[in-house]
Amino acid sequence: MSSIWEYANPKKFIETVDKVLPFVSVLAAIGLVAGLIWGFFFTPDDYRQGSTVKIIYLHVPSALMAINAWLMMLVASLVWLIRRHHVSALAARAAAPVGAVMTIIALLTGAIWGQPMWGTWWAWDPRLTSFLILFLFYLGYIALWSAIENDDTAADLTSVLCIVGSVFAVLSRYAVNFWNQGLHQGASLSLDKEENVADVFYFPLLVSIGGFILLFLALVLLRTRTEIRARRMRALLIRERMS
Amino acid sequence: MMPELGKYAGAVLSSYGLSLALLIALIWYSLWRSRRVAKSLKDVEDRVKNG
Amino acid sequence: MIALLIRDIRLAVRAGGGFGLGLAFFLIVVVLVPFAVGPETTLLSRIAPGILWIGALLACLLSLDRIFALDREDGSLDLLASAPLPMEGIVTVKALAHWITTGLPLVVAAPVLAVLLSLPEAGFLWLVLSLLIGTPALSVIGTFGAALTVGIKRGGLLLSLLVLPLYVPTLIFGAEVARRGAEGLEVDTPLFLLGAITLFSVALLPFASAAVLRMNLR
Image 1 (cartoon, rainbow over the protein chains, first blue to last red):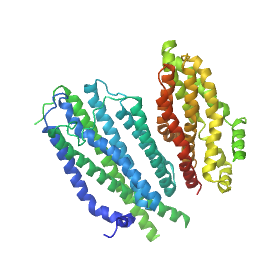
Image 2 (cartoon, chains in turn green, yellow, blue):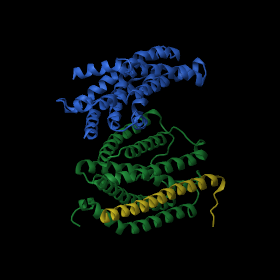
Image 3 (cartoon, chains in turn red, green, purple):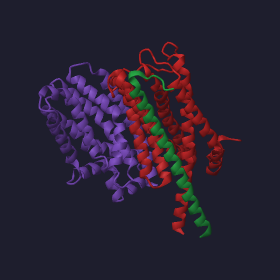
C-alpha cells in the first residue's frame, strides 16, 4: 500500500470494493440495528419531550450525514479538478442521491418531531430552511449530472457547481440566520457539557451515528462501483459504434 | 416488548417507519442498479470480445 | 470588449430579442398578486417589497438562457472563444449586457409597479436602491448558470433549478432592505451585506463562469 492514489485506478478500486464491501455492509447493519434498537426500546422518555426524544436517533445522524455527504462531494470534486481521477468524480456522483435521501429523512423526522413539540409541522427556522436549501442544491447537482451526455464534461461542470454551490450554501446559511432567529435547540453534540444531551441518550445516539456513517460508506462504495462499470460500458458502446 | 410511547406514539412510529422505508428504498435501488449495470457490462464485454 | 457589449445590447433590444419580455413579465406578476391575495391595501403594502423582489428575480431568470444560447446556435460563441479576449472578460461583458437590458429596466419599473401594490412612501427609495445593488448579483449568478447549461438542449428548466438556490442570499438581503425601508426601520446592516454579496459575486463568479464555458466548448 504505497499511496492512497493507487485506489484512483478504477480496476484496483473495484477489486478493493469487492473485498471491503461485505465487511462494511455488515458493520453498518450492526451499527444501525444496535443503535436504533437501543434507542427505540431501551432509552427512557425525556421529561419534557416524552417519547418523541427517540426521534433524535434518526434525526441527528441523518442531518449529520446530509452535510457530510456534501462535504465529501466537495472534496471529491476538488480531487477530480486537480488530479483528474475518474473514480473521484464518480464517487461524488454516487454520493449525491444518498445525501439527498439523508436530507429528506432529516427534514421529515424534524417535521414529525416539530408537530407535537413546536405545535407546527414546519417553521421557517434557520436550520430547517438551510436544510431545505441544501436539498435544492442536491437536486440541482443530480439534475445537472443526468442532463449532460459526455462523462468528462459532466464531471467538470458538476464539480464547479459543487464548489460554487458550497460557497453559496454557506452564504445562505448566514443569510437565513440573519433573516430569522430560530427556535431550534443548540448543538446537541457539542463538547460543551452544559448544552449536551444526557448520557442515556448520548451513547445510543453515538452508535446510531456510527451506523449511519458506515451505511453511507457502504452505499457510496457500492454506487461508485456501479458508476465505474456504467462509465466503462458507455465507453465500450461508443467504441463499438465507431468501428 | 413494545415500549410505552404515550401520546406521541404516532409521531415516533411514523418517523421510524418513514425513515426506514426511505433507507430501504435507497439500498434496494442501489443494489438493483448495481446488479443490472454489472450484468449489462458483462454482456457488452462478451460481445466485444467475441464479435 | 465595448464593441461586444454594444453588439449584445443591440441584439437584445432588436425585435425578438426579448428586451421587453422581462418587463412585461414583471408587470404581470405584480398585477396577478392582488387577484390571488385580495385587494386590501394594508395587506398589499405589507407584502409589496417581497412581491416586487420576487417579481424582479423571476423576470431576471426568464432571460438568462438567452445569454449564451443564441450565440451558441449561430457559432459566434466559438468565434468569441478564439478571439484575443480572455474568457473572463467575455463572461463579464455578457453579464453586464444582461444587467443593462434586464436588471436596469426592472429597477426603473419597480417604483411604478410599487404604486400598484401601495408600497409605503418611505420604502420607494430603499426598494430602488436595494434592486440597484442586488440585480447585478442576479445577472452574474445567472450568467454562471447559463454557462453551465449552454450545451444542453432545452436547458431552461434545469437552469432555473440550478440558479434559484444560488439566488437565496441575494433575495434575503435585498428583500430585507426593501421591507425594513418600507417599515421605517434601520437598513444599514442588510444593505451592507447585500452590497457584500454583490461585490463578492461580481469579483469571483466570472472566473467560475469562464472555466465552465471553456469546459463546455471543448
